[in-house]
Image (cartoon, rainbow, N blue to C red; front, side, top):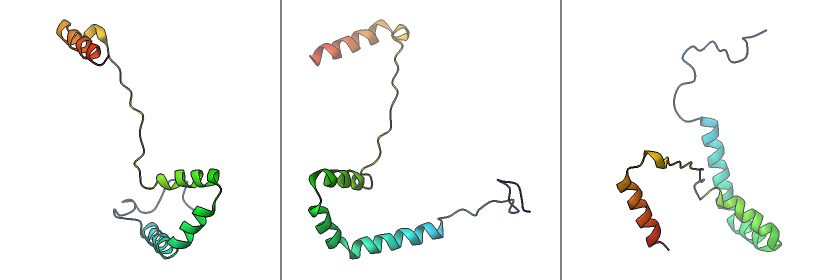
Length: 95
C-alpha cells in the first residue's frame, strides 16, 4: 500500500538546492513573457480602465516587496522621566 502520509524511505530528506522543475518553469514563463511583451502591452492598453487597474495591481506584486504588519507596543510605566520628556518634546515639535 505505501508509507503513511508524511513518511519517506529517504531518511535525509530532499537534498538542498533549487527545485529544478520550478526553475525550468520560471525560465519558460520568463521567455514567453519576453517574447510576447509587445502583444501583452497592447492588450493591456486595450482593457477597460477598471480591468487595467486590476491587472496593474497584479503586476505590482511581482516588483514591489510585500509589506508586513508591525506591532509596536510601548509600556509607558517602564519609561524613565527623561525618556518621557524626550517623547513629549518630539511630539510637541511635530505639531
